[in-house]
Image (tube, rainbow, N blue to C red; front, side, top):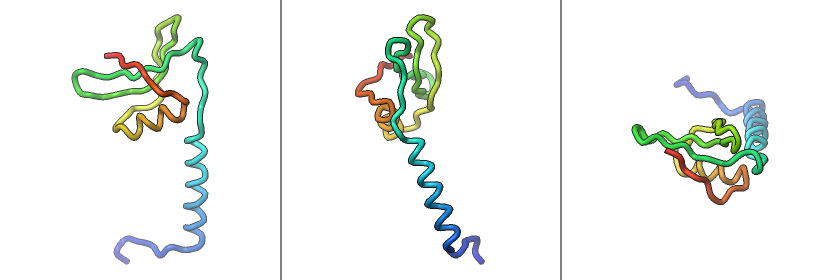
Length: 89
C-alpha cells in the first residue's frame, strides 16, 4: 500500500545488522607516513575533491574517496588520524 512496508522484527534486525557493518567501515585506518603523504586533489575547473595518498618516491596518487562536502572530509581525516591535509591543484 503506498509503497512503504510495515516495520517488522526481521526488517528491524536487518537494519541493525547494516548499521553494525557500516560502523566497522568507519573504524580508524592506517597508512605508512614514511611512504605515503595524505593529499586532497582539487580540480580548479569543477571543484571536485578527491582524498587519497601520494607515494613520496614515485609521486603516484592513490584515490581513497571522492569528497562531496566538509563532513566527508572531516570523516576522512578522523579515519586516518589526520589533523591536516595538503591540497594539490
